[in-house]
Length: 173
Image 1 (cartoon, rainbow, N blue to C red):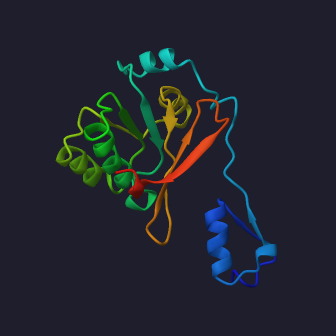
Image 2: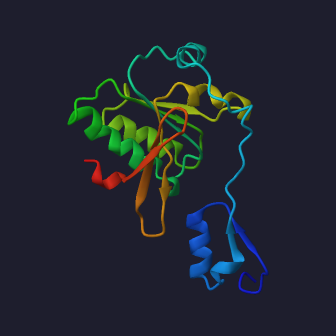
């Protein structure tokens, strides 16, 4: 059915490339990222956001928002915290995982196994309208995407999203 479609709309460049790999000519594939309401998701003051969600933490905060499932790279992100905290001296770093999903129990167990209970906060699913508050607490937003080859990428963005850096998480340690 895909190969016969006049146009295929994918939600990311990665997904667009996968569609092309399935035999759809690139000229018929468009990557259209999910839209975000800029007013609803406007960043708030960091101190006010941390106070609102009860986060008494002055160090760097990394925030992941999304489905908690292995294909999203959440486990790799948690595992990347171990060398950051233990090898690179960033015991003040905190990862907040906002969301829930099929891997909740596995992620919570991995946090305990790695001794990261003070450095990883599993916030659970949030109302859509409440998501801007934990996002505003951060210095860094973690956007993970596990590709078909098992590679997980990490994107770091400035609070105003004016620049970003991508690295492969398995290269962190």
